Length: 258
Ligand code: MG
Image 1 (spheres, rainbow, N blue to C red):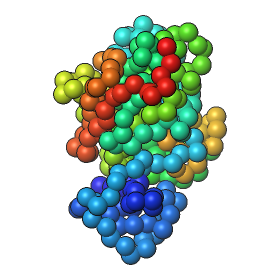
Image 2 (image 1 turned 90 degrees about the vertical axis):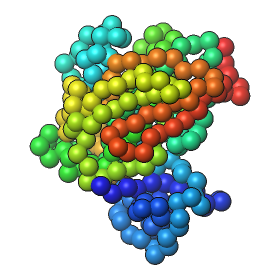
Image 3 (image 1 turned 120 degrees about the vertical axis):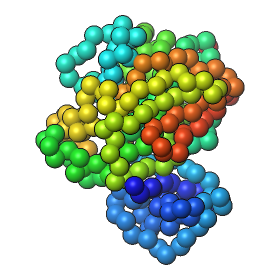
């Protein structure tokens, strides 16, 4: 397994590969090629930033049978995809800011796919050749708006509603990994990625029939059952396999709506 990420040092933002406890600095984002500039910086000296900068942030819904049941929905027979705003991305350690405190706003832990190569009309068999790697993500969702609006984009696109990271992992098999979400230390979601109705390859192939996937695009693959509301002061932790956990706290947005 290799580990890549986005980092910040004072005013400088860059991407790099994490080896042991040091970051090897890249000349450009890792999804555009692995070219190192020779600089090596100890991780503790750096701030962990969002590990991706997708042109498109795609989400998949209703991809675990138990979650379809708890949402009282019926399977569609194909993957359900929509777009989230890339400005909703939040790094590990950042604060999820609830936009509407009176609305039910839920956590959803999800496996994220980072696209590594342009994909247009790719087959399921060749889909993984277009994947760079994987990450841990959350699809924070305003259920009040989700129920009252036909489009899912607004209810899931508020700033900070897509925590992701801390890093992105390559050379890893994600077909059967445990995925969990803890709220204030208590396990709320617990499943395995093998329970996904549509696999990573099927999702990439399906999305590539509708639109062209480009390097750096991020796809969230849906959440298992156990979703529930977040509250001011919560500590949320999502974990996939033995990857470092994605930890975020929760607050109310400074200009929260009603
Ligand atoms: Mg979701």
